[in-house]
Image 1 (tube, rainbow, N blue to C red):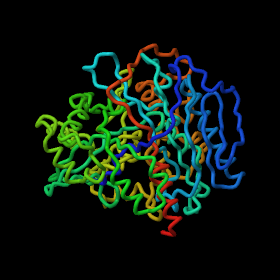
Image 2 (image 1 turned 30 degrees about the horizontal axis):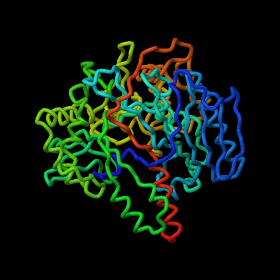
Image 3 (image 1 turned 90 degrees about the vertical axis):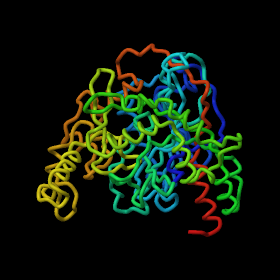
Image 4 (image 1 turned 60 degrees about the vertical axis):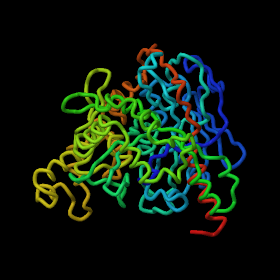
Length: 489
């Protein structure tokens, strides 16, 4: 595996102690939007629902445009869900393609901080990771120490991607913030190969299904990066320090993963491996008590430790990956109303970061069904695509898109938000955020706007304390700074 694809990026940072999410008046924030100029290079933007530090490399009018787009996204989200304690994060607007190697990414949520919670004080129940933004809205059994940021939102100014200059960004920001609020699976898939290696992706970032391969679910890794990384001035020394980063723990699944079900049977997919992280911690850390370093946790190392899992665990993680992660419409979320809402899975492949973590796109499902039935080069498949652009024809988009399009894993057209609302079916109660999305977010713990707050107490898991996640600053930004300093492209 490319080990870094598994990392929950962690670093040291100051923490602010809050009272229980029920009662807090966060910083005494006023009820109207207030932009306050502070020392360069960022502003603090705050209202009663959101507070963020805004770092922008662009001229003021461009930055103001992005802030207006963010305000639009906040308005849609806060008019859909109750936010009892403001969501706190940082926003970076920069050339994410040239500087930080994020390809054609237009926006992304990074460094989401999680907190481990249980449904009761019974330690025999498995804990799950809840995004900090959600934890702030829940009732807890005790006061806890929150981290400065719930997540980081990076926005590409597209200076290296001129084809996206006119792209509608408000819908993308809304999409990404919903990920930061908890619409995310952290159950990753890898391949155990015969030469004792585990790999998480091919050169295109996808895993293509092969009947002869053995697939596995990979536990989520938590490293702890040293603040020394921010002080090092030599690039080679920096790389060495990264490799000597300690892996602190493997983690439980996310609360989103908790509710994953088979769309055919309704059975909870991960119910028999809720404590998978414990077994991984027992089998994959050195027996002599020495730290597990990033440079040691190689493909071969992790592959060998997975082979020491119990036969039952090996059978389960192999079976469910093949049964659910490589075909269309196999996985969904069982909502609190008992309804199953289908998530996006692909035919014959798994795409890390896209599979499972998005709403099912009916157009893609129809496309994959035709490929399964008639082959990729069949006329029925070709008829769905525009012969010039090779993208889906507009009439098919209008026919198949449903109310949950804001969380599709890919947009096929450059519609504005207004055009999307006009052209596609949508939940009229919450325009832009579809009913299926609302049901899933309510299931993981959010309260629908105007509804009575849930008084359920969530219990803080004392066995798992996660460091602050700051991979964007310590990895992406710092690596670019050192490369620029040493004039390395």
